[in-house]
Image (cartoon, rainbow, N blue to C red; front, side, top):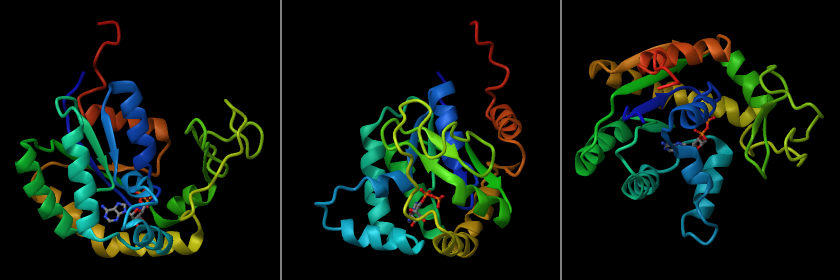
Length: 225
Ligand code: ADP
C-alpha cells in the first residue's frame, strides 16, 4: 500500500476522475472528488439548492461549503493510505485554506499533478461522457475510450447510461473560463512549492497513465511481490 498524497489540477474533463478511479483500483489510493462531495449533498441540506444552482451554471461553489465538506471527509478517512484529491483546490483562496487544513490534520501533499489538455479535446470528452447510474462504470461515446457496446446501455448491467447535468457545451464553456481565471493560478502556487508535475493529457490514456505512475514511483513495483 502506498502513502503518496496527490492533488489533481486540470480543466474540466481532462481526465481527473478517470485517472483517480484507476489509481484507486490499481494502487489502493483513497479518492476524494470535490465535485462528488458537492453532488452527493443530501437534498434536505440547507445548502442543497444553492449547490445545484451553481453546478448548473459552471461557477465555483462558495469556499466555505467545499471547505466544510472536505474537512469532514478528511477527518473520516484513514489518512495512513495515500489519497487523491480531485478538483481541489480550485482557486488561490482554497489553496491557502488547504495549507491551513493540512496542518490541522497533520498531513502533507507530495505531488500536484497538472493534466494539461486543450479546450477542443476537453469539449469532446465532456459531450461524449456517460456513466452507469447503477454500477458507476464510465463510458465515452465520442472519444473511443470505453465506447458502450450497445448504444446508451451499460455493458455490464444493461442499465441506461446517463449524462451529468453540467456536461453540456454551455456549462462546459463557463467551467473552462472559470478554470482559466481561477484555477490556473493554483498551478503556479504548487510550482513554487516545488511539487508540480505537468503531464500532457491529450495523449492516449494509457500513455499518460504510465507517465503518471512513473512520476508517483509506482511503475516499477513488481506485482508478484
Ligand atoms: P469537472 O472537473 O469536469 O468540471 P468536477 O466534478 O470536478 O468536474 O466539478 C464539477 C463542478 O463542481 C464544478 O464545475 C464546480 O461547480 C463544482 N466544484 C468542484 N470542485 C469545487 C471546488 N473545489 N470549489 C468550488 N466548486 C467546486
